Length: 393
Image 1 (cartoon, rainbow, N blue to C red):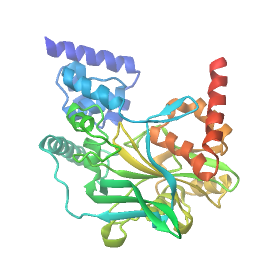
Image 2 (cartoon, rainbow, N blue to C red; image 1 turned 90 degrees about the vertical axis):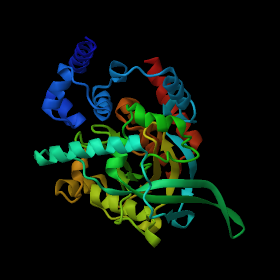
Image 3 (tube, rainbow, N blue to C red; image 1 turned 60 degrees about the vertical axis):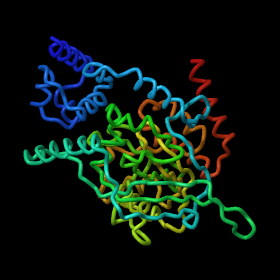
């Protein structure tokens, strides 16, 4: 009886979502047969309960498993642990750990080649995902994620200082180990899964990454054209993360061994240059790049480095490169949007599109204004004015 009740409730959620079977299958990454079985009463695996919850916009765990009081208390405590980025009445789900101008000599990366072992329950999630991936691959399905070899952020220190010419200079120290994309999918990105959340709730992300997760560090670039436009990307619906959402000009994971530098540690500036070339078809100069902010998105437990940078190309140049297919990863974005890069214009655009943004991307463009040269007071005033205007209309 309980099984039929769960099946009926799931069918009602699916009907209420307004999504077609094809859309659900594409977003969840399952087969039509699996979806049909779940509608009929078969319980999805923990992994797919999480994926269905994300795709349908509804927490399905209470339908299949009643969360314990202890788990609810942990989740509530986790929601108030971090000082989130807030500007002009807008709060973004991203926590600033360090805000400065980090040139290449101010970021020190080290690398431990020993792979980190996964706890048994996370390993079981990964094994189930791999088995399903292999079956779908054998059937010839498209839009399957590729298991990129990546870096795991093991530790960080944003408080180290070094004396240079009589002045204290901030040094961001980062230690990495080997990791892969499939582990990121079942840990960092598996946000509706209570197995995963048991570890996330126990962590203090502003002190240390979750040891049991992939704990990926991403590089996000907010690029401003020669004629003064911020490039915003609308992610492809086929992208595994943030499909259909607005994001930074360039969003890149750090890959092994492509981005490896000294002794195997990642070269973050090389990753940024590679990302700009692959996603926009342009070449950046690593010597002129600086990162402006380091922080974490608490829900995904994902760390990011943000950089805002002026490029020599105009808006028309970027569109022409895209038109001829110069960016090899053009598929990652459905389209590019161009926003005049001034606090008032950015604030107005954000007010119009706020629900479409991935939090990492929204935090990056706000802090990019600061890195380019606008004061925090200017940014606060612009966002406050726009929000006040919207409340009065």
